[in-house]
Image (cartoon, rainbow, N blue to C red; front, side):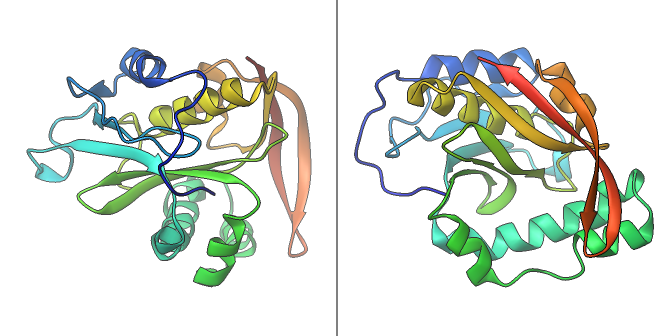
Length: 212
């Protein structure tokens, strides 16, 4: 995951973020924040659904994650698996996938081995996505209450912009049944279906790739 705002990227991605997010329904504010992370800028966007949670101000921020975000990330992961992925997986599979809220220290430690972005609304993290140096997208989750409103699209835009900056030619991810349509709509293709064993339980997912 990442932190500190010191260095401007070689390929300033502000307009790339705005175009990609606007095309999928997440409306940007008039001006993006000019605060740059060491690997990505902070961008303010608007949720596609203006009445989400009956809040009149629906601008959310996409920024680099910090260790202080680990607690919210841990809870979001657990809640999304149990409330969203449960549409496509049996209860015993969900329990194997996320049997408990993982320790905050585990999520904080992940930040040293991958770049992570969070989407933040009113100080609440409503999505996060991780990118490894190889171009592998590891965890990628949107809050259960903010599905289909542009959060995932904005996070993926951050990942694509960073991959371009790093010169990574291809993105890959092991994608759940639930997330497959999202990734397909954004240019990812299924390489193969997989049977992944988690804590002794088999789950179907898909290796997907996108060239950039």
